Length: 74
Image (cartoon, rainbow, N blue to C red; front, side):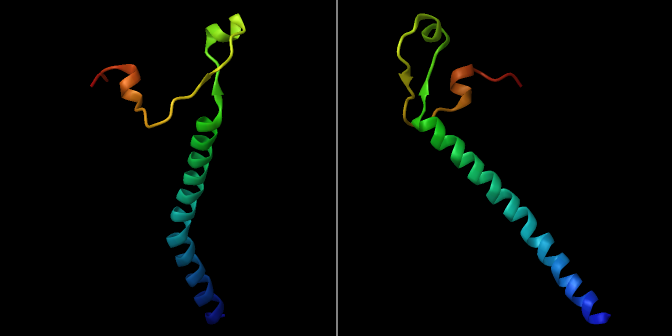
């Protein structure tokens, strides 16, 4: 019985140490997939949907959210 408890303790410690890193890696993969899809996808603007104009290709490079929204209120 003591051996089983020792194995169980090792598994619990391994789960506590590896769990957050595996969860974070899963989130990173999801974010990478979304960024890749956004980089290759064409963007339809609302006026283009109504007018039937072709989509505008998405710009390359890093764009920060605060640049689009202006100053952030504190």
